[in-house]
Length: 275
Image (cartoon, rainbow, N blue to C red; front, top):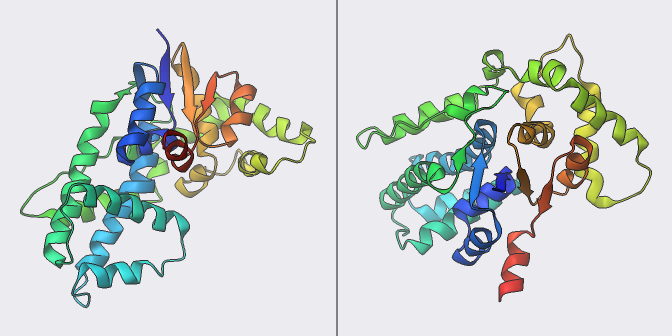
């Protein structure tokens, strides 16, 4: 049976997007849907952590309402942070639990985070093996209704801990276990001649791989810059699978590593197509 190995770019909309986008993926993906601990880590770090950041911004005593905190957040210069907040707001609004009441909004956000993290394993299966052994990929949020802020703060400290790489095997995975694959990615970049703007993401990854030194550790920050290449290599551990993604980088990475893959349209294009 064919299986779908979900990149973070597909896992996130499958969990958080509108009903029509979710319907697209439910109809398009194979019945066997899988993710790994590393991909879970990317989702927690890239999306859940952003939702928690806003929760703590809203908790600051000098902001009296949700709209005040949102106004401050809107001045955040990071595009990804804006996108994450817009997605979270769309979801909470759909549950009709959002108001300008500060404490009510905080409860709605905390409940949204709790349900979303708990929902992950219901939509897809963990492959049960992840050669990076990323400790952030197995983090859990211990929700205590009496100590919500304490629970979220503990998780934030763990997901943002840049020393976590000392307890994983990503260095061995890249430099030893899958060295031939990462060398091939770096060398393929040198051999490509065409000028294609869609290739820029791949080029950045390949250049970062070329910079890796055997005597230097791959830190959490550095790991995040080559994450797509790590996911492409990890997908090889699941037999008879298609790597499902929306990132163009995989259009270059997957042929290099010998992995079947499928590029999906982004959420806007999906909605335009089904409108």
